[in-house]
Amino acid sequence: MNTDECLPGRREGSGVALRACGEVGAALPVDVLTYEEKSLSAILRVVSSGLVKLWSALTLLGFYQNRRCAFRVLQTSPFLLALSGNSRELVLD
Amino acid sequence: MPTPSREGQAQSLSAEAWQQVSFLIPECGILPEVLKSTIADIGEYYVVRNLPIHELVAHEFIDAFVKKGSCYALTYNTKIDQDNTAALLPNGKLILSVDKDTYEELGLQGRPSQYSGKKIMRYIITIDLTDSGFHPDSKKHNRVLWALKEKKPLEFDFLLAWYNTGAEGSTLMSYFSKNQIQALKPKITFSMLRDLQCPVLQSNELQGKPDESCSTEELFEWLGAVLSQVSLDNKSSSFVSTYCCPQPNTIVEKAFLCTITGFIIPEKIIQLLEQLCSYFDEPKLAYWLTLTVHGFADSPVSWRESEHGFHKGGENLYNFVIFRNLDYWLQMAVGTNDDCPP
Image (cartoon, rainbow over all chains, first blue to last red; front, side, top):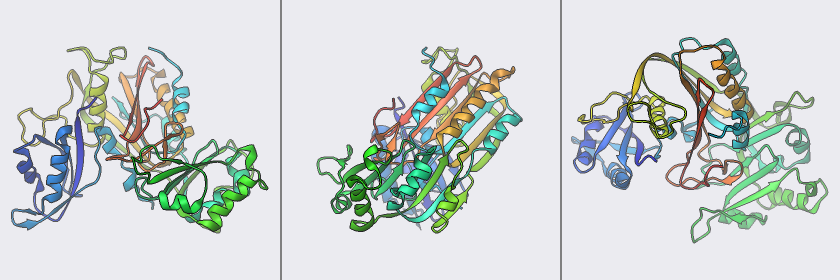
């Protein structure tokens, strides 16, 4: 069983939020598995015992380098494969 | 390893339509024509906006679609952990997953949700539309119709699909022509992955063998990385990411990845699975290929008719790894609020 959890987040606003993970990273090892500039979204990986800490840290992060920002968590799963499909984002033409 | 037919496995796995199907074929530059035509034949699905649910209980609908072939329906844009949701299964069962207030107003018999906790806030109502006791003049039918039409009318946007073996009669488009019905084609994307690190696998070594092959779990995570475009080549000292392709691995010059998104019925997935198995009828460089199928996070059922819920996630997916020698691995994943897959 995979003991890591993967957590994608979408950032509203500008700035490089990747380095923001460094603040959490100081306390908790977090992998930024992907980051897509176009959609401002990333997939993060954290050990399952750290999920709540990471999620709450992201939720409470409102400023980065004096610029406003906000994180929205779109999907979480212990399986990275589950993140490649998100039916809640299914858009019909 | 037991080997029931893969097709039989796939059939028994499905009581619902699926949201996304992906397959990955290493060492494949050009997709064989027969696979191309199978994908082209995946078929349309339909969305009907603002459809009152009592229309699915009407005997004209049941006789035209539910009793002939396999009819699938699922409410669109409803969240299983918040909203009322409904699904129609190919065996003729209509499943309603409703909140406490709606359940009490409807007055139909159901049972509390397994994932409701101490205070029951969600109920599941199952109506068997093909039951012999559900004929047009029966008490059962009249009560259900009254509840859904007059007592507490419920209306949803529905995704619909119908599989019939060439039966004559009306189509979904003509039946719902007075409603806002729209035919949609699944979205299909192809990509060619170059210089892809692929794990070395041995079909009979599920746990992997040090320096010889990777385990099923490593493959499962690697596949997630590939489908999510995660870099496979990080150092363990890297600040950004430490994920790397499991060892042992080989670099494959090219790999074909196809993703189909929409409302995909199991009958079509089985056809695709059969064609993927036939890929190895002729000699191929690839040792294995994968087929991954994702369910809807907000479907009220998964794996036959087990109740499905959404806790922190609504994952509900399965993955076939088909080897050159036609051995296969089947991996199934569910979320917290799910029964174990069969």
